[in-house]
Image (cartoon, rainbow, N blue to C red):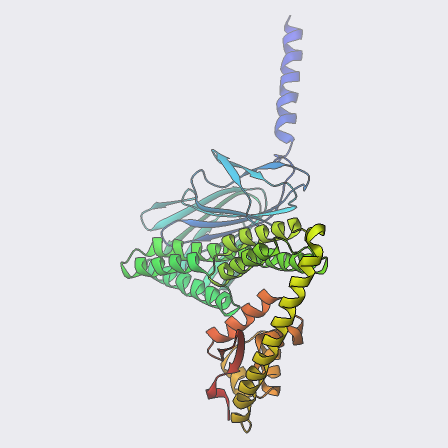
Length: 429
């Protein structure tokens, strides 16, 4: 009996030994951690940016996050597209089908504690972590020798190896107001850059305005978080705008195909719907623009040819209409050309100061090329001429012209039912 007990004790001891000698695995479904960046603020909250690799064929993956409570959770794939998720305790389930890389960004206050003037930061990490401290922070102790250490933007960072990470530090003075102002300035610069590219950021601008108001009311922490959120909202708006642009171009192509194939019955409604999509786009209502453009595409696809029994009558009426329209446009074109000639003769001795424009504005390559084209044409050209010259889709040309108008470089003048784009007088000599 004692022999059996001894054997059992030996087996139990070996089992425990094997159990504790096996390294802890951090694998969660089919994900592989790639990087972990943590920014600590003076109020103890942290901004987490966690990148992981996943299997594109997996419908969903589970990812353990750091901390149980969080705010402003945003998850994107490698193309920057937002993904849906659900959370149970400290695990989030992400709808990741088709994605090979996930970037998870959120804020949490669960990783830091404070005792007197000393802050403690604790984290169990599957990979090495880059930790950026608040400006003016002094490190007192850490769990391991840093793999890297440095300063970026006046803030110190350390890179610690995977495992149980511990860091203690002390702050000289709280810098919440400085952090909030930095976040607002960063968001302002980012939104301005996107707006100069022709995007309209209604929601992001409202959030940034609210952040500035919170800052003025000394609610620095909320102001900082809302300014960061404005950047995320701007990115989401850009995704919607780009998708709407694609849908508008697709609708233009389908309407042109219908015209070429003689499927004109019902095509007027498709063109009107496309015009609505373009109007929505110019107002910054990108979701509505995308929806209307999709409807225009469907209407163009369902457009039909004129009924065969009425074909002769249809062709006769069409011929009369074409003839009348031709005469009308010929007469109007003569008047328009006369107007254009008068306009261009008046500016015959003027030249465009492109060097001044390029010095005052940070322009995209296509903006510069269009301005050079206008300069070669005495400072003006019709929007249709610009489209034809650079082989642009109508929506792209509209965005470009709108961008130059918003920068106060050009102005639009209606001549008949056409838009004449003219370089502002301050750039003419």
